[in-house]
Amino acid sequence: MKKLFLICAALMLSCAMGTAQNTKFGKPSQLDWSMVGWSEAPDAEAIVLCKTLNVEYELQSDFKSYDNSTSELSAESVAYGGAGINKFISEDKITMTYSVKMRTKILKDSGAKYANLDIVYYWEEKDRTHSDDISSLSIVVFDNSTGKVKKRKLNSSCWTEERLDANYMVRHIRVADVKAGDIIEYQYDLTSRRATFLYDWQVQEDIPVLYTKCEMNIPAFLTFNMSVPVHPFVKSKVEEASVTLPQEISDLQAPKKVKSNYYTIESRDMLPKALDLQRRQSETPAATVGGEGDFEALK
Image (cartoon, rainbow, N blue to C red; front, side):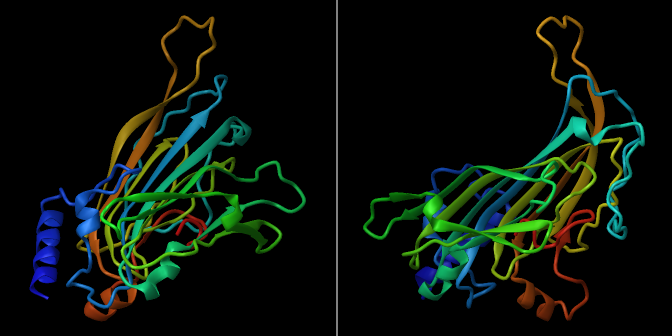
């Protein structure tokens, strides 16, 4: 028990210093392996060690640049109707990619269910012109029970597709033979052609989340009202940036750029939703960040 306490205490100390989480995927760190529990949530069956999202927009080379002032990142505003967009801009010239990465450790055998993942995506039944694409999906299970790390890569046999309604599908990913001590890494890209729709990002889960970061580089002509959780462990900011348009081979001019708003939302040591609400006496809702969209889309 003393050893467990020391490990947890050391982990929480390093979290506070901002050096605990390994944000490089493909090889769990020694600290990841040493994580056998967390004193803040002693009953947790699993824990999210690291979860990141990067949203990038891609504009076609003939896209016309429209500049707007930098949007405000407001904790009180919520978008109900999607983004505002200049009526002279064609959405057919815009695509966006969500790059998702998540590393989860199973703390108890009963937490094997947290190795599973559901990805909800837009796939219209009749017209697939603006349907989403899932690509670069990688699922890896790391096992260190023998003192030597073994890596098991999963393929498409571990997932199934289900239609939710006329507009949405869900990819159910089920990971078998997972036990306490295993670490699971997910990585995938979701490409969307719906420029005025922004999927929400879950800052908080049913299990603890030691580190999460969401970065979105959104062209300024798209004006989302960002709903950011009011939580002491969540930090957010918005900065002016740009999106570079692709150039033709014969184009010797300087790269064309469109002004953008670069949003960053970051959180450390987030308690499970139920436990957090209990401790804070229901002062605020569970932490979620996003614009108009499906709150469960990118869990």
